[in-house]
Amino acid sequence: MSDTTELPQKSIDPETKAATVPRRAVFFLATPLHDGRVHHSYLAGAVQMSAAAPGQLIVSTYTNSFLPVSRDLLTAQFLRSPATHMLCVDSDIGWSPADVEKLLRANKDFVSGIYARKQPDGAPASFLLEAREGELIECQHAAAGFLLLTRACVERLVAAHPELEYKTPHGTTWALWSPVFNGKPYSEDTAFSARWRALGGKIWAHSQVLLKHYGERMFFPSGFGDAPP
Image (tube, rainbow, N blue to C red):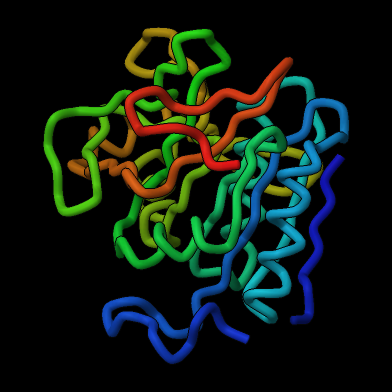
């Protein structure tokens, strides 16, 4: 089941936007759901985002037990929308409009925030490399729980993989999130990242976008200081 809502809603900090960032970014908030529920911190972020960026937010969810298909269908909905950026946010992530602003200002095709796996050691869910560019850290692959993709990025992936097209009752989509890449099994976000890197694309994580990940308790990425209150 899919649910897409365009919120008729001031641009995020319009007087101070960097010249390299489009003044009228439109975000497609893509959230896959397992049972239709979201954490209250996720909901707070969505409500704050709709107030901070009126006219710039399209909210879409899809409820399905198989995560790769949910992400595929949300990606296809994004491509059929007028949005300039696909903002992937999982339902158990605590986030705010300021986090989105930092990713947007990075001016990258594929950039994520940093959050921990749901493990005691708090290891980042993304595979971080040594390369740095200012506040950005290059990644081998990025977890999709808080990820900003440009339309150019997604369109390039679709053009490179016509063999991944398939039909659904919701329209044509592409198995860009298929957990199999080059004959090997991966998580769906690792496989998606691998497809982008195979095209020569780079993946970045923003060191100042540190997010809370909720499960039986709150998890925060280790090595980045204490979690904010």
